[in-house]
Amino acid sequence: MAVDLSVLPARRGVRPATTGREIPHDQLEDFSPPQIRAQLVVRAQALPGVFTTASRVSEPSSLAFRLHQQQRDFEAFLHPSVDEFGHVHRSGFLHLTVPRDALAALERLGWTEPHPITRRAEFPDTIVMFYAPRDEEELEVAAAVLQASYEQAVRQR
Image 1 (cartoon, rainbow, N blue to C red):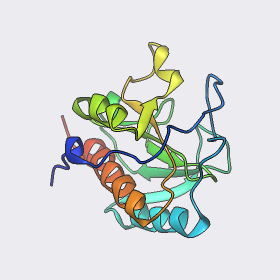
Image 2: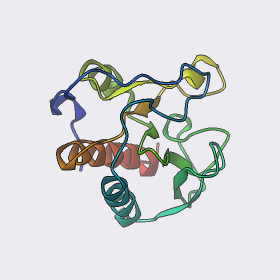
Image 3: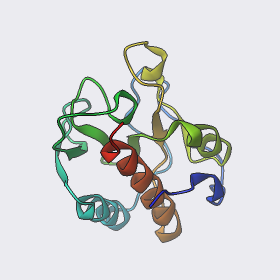
């Protein structure tokens, strides 16, 4: 099931202010209520083959979305991890890899910005910072983007 991310609704409100650091971990004014973040984690854990642990590529309080996989597409995983395709921070802010053809639409619709780490050649430019879903409607968008990230990670090239 390929998810078409270009048909998502635009995100309401102004874009969150991120820390401006090379590797930002929080939004300064927008965050997920605990129950929304918890529902997002449950949805990630329901994806076939996904398991969660503390992130190895981010702060330890971030929960990683992982797959047991021998072969992998460079653009589908966070680096230097070999199995983490995304993670969620305490605030609900997500770092994910997304399909290349969805990058422009997600940014235009106000859901993401490129992760600053993508400026380095050794990291895929498909890594984005997805703003924390603030309510059930935004949770549905986050779940669709998570689904697309997952599909990219399990696809064999």
